[in-house]
Amino acid sequence: MEEPYYSFNRYLREKFGEKVHRISIDAGFSCPNLDGTLSKKGCIYCDNKAFSNFAGRNVEISKQIETSISYLAKKSNVKKFILYFQSFTNTYADIETLKERYDIAKRFPEIVGIFISTRPDCIDEEKIKLISSYKEKYLVWLEYGLQTTNDDMLAMLNRRHTYEDFLSAIKITRKYDINTGVHVILGLAQAFSAAIDDVQKIAAFDIHGIKFHVLHVLKDTVLNKLYGSGKVKLLEEDQYVRMVCDFLEKIPKNIVVLRLVSSANPAHLIAPPWINKKNEIILKIKKEFEKRGTCQGYFFAKR
Ligand code: SF4
Image 1 (spheres, helix red, strand yellow):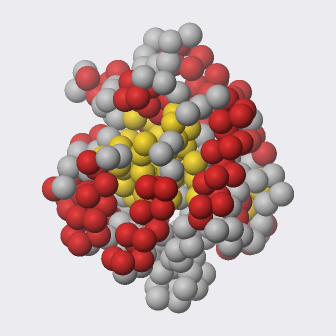
Image 2 (cartoon, helix red, strand yellow):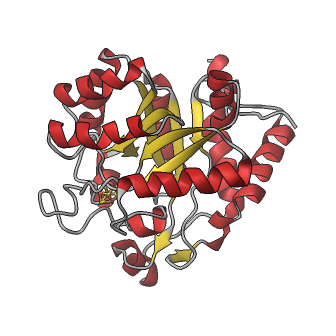
């Protein structure tokens, strides 16, 4: 079945002519929303240990990379890798520290790309210039956790940044022509009206990729307390499938879908359990598009 959306795998194959794997690492950064600078509580859904294998485990960075490369090379015979600075806030340090950590990529000839995930309020022109300097040798992306364009919702999530912060970050990132990804959460209490508002704004951004996060509840989080007291309702699997299709239909065809469904470590996940049936959900999304006779960008093109 042909993919009705622009998958990350397809994008990487087009760029490199072969399969490329992304390696997620914890480069030892913190987050201003956890270290007390903005707050000590973090975003209400945050538990980095559930998001990635190395998060918060103090494994040396080179060791993380070696372990992942050797495992993936054996498992899938892949020869090229993207280094993904995923855990916590990966631009939250001084320039020297950032350079030292990003430079670790240079020790591994198999690494062909550097992806950096961060908060929109943790970037400035000096950092962007540094990140831009890696473009000569690597495929470089900067991913921003936006989550929603609605400031009330951002406050509810305790993100401690605004939509305006995100707009400033995008502007400076694009000035240096760095590929830009945006993370959004689907399943917030805003339901469809605010989600539609998000889509309309996001469709107009000068961005290259989108990463979907299904709102899910992890054990040691504020969200778990809210969920336990019945104040939060989560999406059912079929609702999510329809919501993703609605979203993708309205954004341009050339925006890469960096991730269609998030997953979580089962040891930390409270609900909903279906997020870890990734392949089934992806198949359902493809079938939903087939049933509708649409695809990513279908309604964007017709505006
Ligand atoms: S910005 Fe990221 S790392 Fe920081 S608290 Fe929020 S989700 Fe966690």
